[in-house]
Length: 449
Image 1 (cartoon, one colour):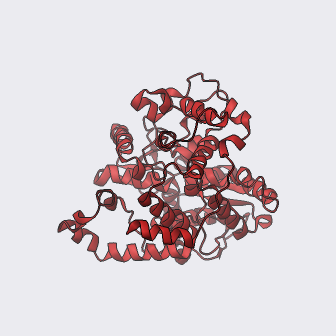
Image 2 (image 1 turned 180 degrees about the horizontal axis):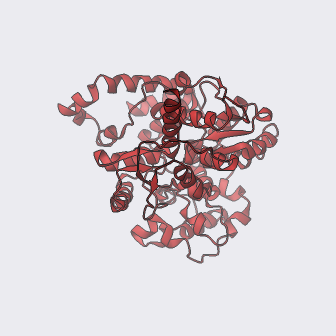
Image 3 (image 1 turned 90 degrees about the vertical axis):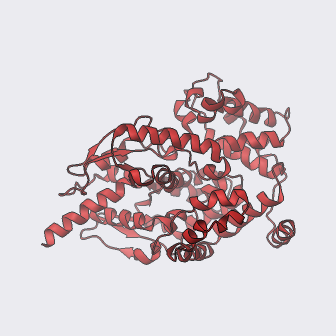
């Protein structure tokens, strides 16, 4: 039955797949950069786990280079190795040669999908449903969010778990169901006006609302808008925004990623914005790569380079313009901070979130041991590689427990969901921008008394 549904769906929305080998068409100098020095080995979660060379960044690059040289065919084993990689980019931070591993692993996964070595009916159906349908159609994605919200708000999900009804599902779906994020009571477009003005305008910025961020963490988008307003920024938020395309780029659907990049660029008036603000570490890393993604597009290459210059992480932007310190605290004392992999390793933003936290009166930041170690979320890694993801989460929870704090901050929706799942009721997971927004609101309330 599933095979039949997939054949119909595939014929209805066939995706052009170029015949060119992606790794062979890649600039060879990118593959040559790796010196095989081994500095990346202790930073790579999969190598640390297995101690196998093929599970390391330099091992994977050797495999990619063999494919580019024509010495190695694309096989299922090659596919499994490329998808065993978290894409956390810790190797990029450690690499003395400046290897652009992000480009390499995305190109390798695109080649896996082009070659079709990982195909099977079930995988192809879920890829089509998520990558080609839901995340390409923002209104359809929000419709699914509304459905999930209804399912969760009525308590039907808890009831069916209690009576063991969900045990009838296939094991993979049964394991995934408890990880479904809680949908927000209202999405971003209902919380944020298309244009909001500060008391005194110094800057004009666009706000990216994201997809999962919009569905599960629209309150953080509202917090981001409030923080920007408090710092003299007019906030422009286009309606029904599309996915940024990071999910597609990281999973080999490069043409869909390019289409979504074009949509994002078209949604914002680049010439009249000082910055385009993102508050999701993983999305931000991809959003800053549109110039590379569209460098061969005759209509969008120049716009994509302009886009890259304008995109700023919220913490990066606040430090750049000078954070206005709130006059009151956020009602919390001690917090710790977990670094999103793509914020610290992909965007090289490490000190700025800490500066945001330290700007809040009365707040004490306790450093987290191994703060930049991956929590195991890594996009959809906790879905595709649940066992390895669980090991990384367990290690992260242990590090958090060492701090003795009950409030953990992070800066990415995937990390937020992963940490909340691992910590349960033992600690609150929030974000620096939310605590800063709380402090500004407390300041306003005090002034109005």
